[in-house]
Structures are given as structure tokens and as C-alpha cells.
Amino acid sequence: MAGRIEAGVSAVPVHRLAEAARPKLRDHFLRLDAEDVRLRFGAPLGPVGIEAYVKRIDFDTDAVFGVYEDELGLAAAAHVAFGADGAELGVSVLPGHRSRGIGSALFARAVEHARNRFVTRMYMHCLAENAAMMHIAKKSGMKICVDTGEAEAFLKLEPADQASLSGELMGQRLALFDYALKTQAAAMKRITEALGGSST
Image (cartoon, rainbow, N blue to C red; front, side, top):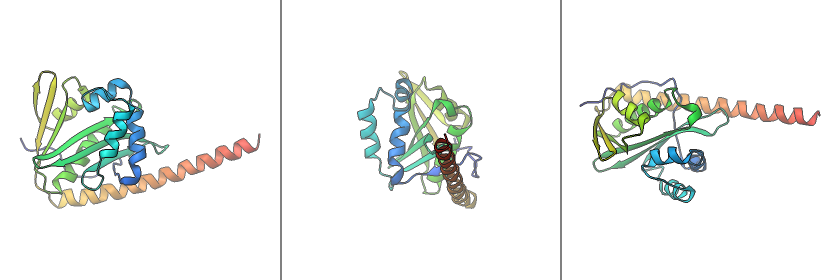
């Protein structure tokens, strides 16, 4: 089944993360509770395991995407690992930011990125009980196979076109603008709080 993901700029600003964001990615995973970590990674994983996972990520070979909170922490993250048979996607969203379309925006951005790099298949491996990821997979037209409590979802990707190429470029530019605005707002908030504290 061919993907039903259409290229375009999402209302959710999704950033392509670089090496400098590794500490924020680690902090994002550490903010997930034990059950969310189990659903994201398919098994229980403690802080040491999370640290090891984040350290192994190659930000140049793979693609990591994130959505920033106003306070500049990562509200959500997606890791696209490229292999010989396609690209594997993992997504996590903090509880306070769910049901806002963030997971779907990350998925669409990952698909667009993979298409533009001549990848023909996207797949996700997750626990069948991971309702959020199963919902994204079904909504996106992925073929889903469930076996002994685990699910594999596959999506055949359309070739890159002008819309996907320009959409990825524009999406990253808007995300950078969003980050600049949030950085400025956070700085103003710190200054305001400092001035308020000094006047008491």
C-alpha cells in the first residue's frame, strides 16, 4: 500500500535535531515515566539504558526530529534509523503534549525526509498495546502485522517530488524561526523574573 502522507508544511514546527541537541534528547526520554519508556522502546529501560541509547545515535547518518516546548525542552522526539531495507521510526511525546497532532506531525516529517533520500519503505516496531503509535500507523495507511503482542507496521513511500523537497526545506526554516521566537521569549521571561526578584 502506498503512503497517504501528503507533502506540505505542518502547523506543528518540527525541527531536524543536530548533535548539540543530544542532552535535550536524553532529558526528554528521562522525563517519560516507566510505562511510557516501555511502550517507546518495547521493553523496560532504566536511565543507564536510555543514556546508552542516546549516546549510540549518529545524528549525521540517522535523522532525529523534535518539537520544542516554550521552555525549550523537547516535548516530543522521533528517531529515524536508516538501514538496507528502509527506515525505522520511533516516536515519543510527553504526556502533557499529547492529543495535539504532534505525533502525526513527527511521522509526516520523518516520511518526507525519508522520501527525499530515496528510501522506499518506512516501518515501525512497537508493542501492540501502544495505542498512540497504532493509531498513527492506521491513520497513515500503514500495513500492520500483529504477532504475540508485538506489531510491525510498514508503509511504502512514494518517490520524492518537488512538493516533498520544498516542503522539507520550508518546514525546517519555519522550525528555526519558531525556535528563535521561543528562545527570545524564554530570555525575556528570565529577565522579567530576575528584575521582579531584585525589586523585592
